[in-house]
Length: 334
Ligand code: TRP
Image (cartoon, rainbow, N blue to C red):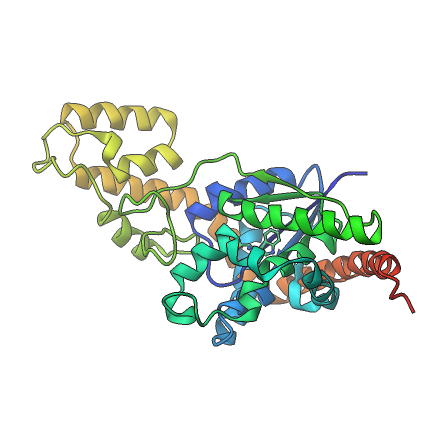
């Protein structure tokens, strides 16, 4: 039996290059060797978007299309919608007895997010909701409802997986060995930098190239990407190591082209405008197969719905079995 993988994404926006290199490409590899459950975490998205349900609803379809268009195969991956699996909500209630409020308040991921969401939760987190503080408990339910053994995530998520493992150990020690302790695996690719040179590409940072950006948008974004500030004239030699245009060439262009670009840039025989134009073309070529798949699914939304329906059905069966075991262990199997 292949091991079970479970991971989730909050449907709050389209995927960008950071998601593709940091996670998506890894999922595409993993789908061949594991029983892969991929949760569209709409309930979790609502914990910090409770006042914007339209956004979450729209992005359930959008993110599913993004994931299909990067090459996830619906024959191999069970795509499912979190809110359609009530067992997750039920487990969340049971697990909430096994976690202290102080422990949740200490969770580094939660702490960072509260600090980033001052508009929603107040300057010192004084307006934090019960639901948001508790979302690590719900995420532990996401994982264990499907007997998830391996959880591919970014580094920022490690404290949440650790919290899940603690809940599992506590559950097993009180009610008898029932749940598996999941292991996190990190995506092997590095973090993708933003167009502005920031260490991280992010939607809220406004420095991202989205997988569904049209050619006009890509041109505009790349033309404004940060280059070596010392290079003023077209034939000034420059340092490609601090240039975002070179950085993206390196990411998506061929090795041969990239080496040539590097040499020419250092020598001063290549202008930034030419270099950006070449990057625009390379980026469009790189994104072309992804966009073709996206166009197909946009024209066939019924196929996307069917994929979600099938995956949700499969996920629900698995969660029901798991719930039976949990209720038995907790002596609430009336
Ligand atoms: N918290 C994750 C994120 O923001 C999304 C997520 C929800 C998740 N449920 C999960 C990740 C279960 C791993 C396992 O990216």
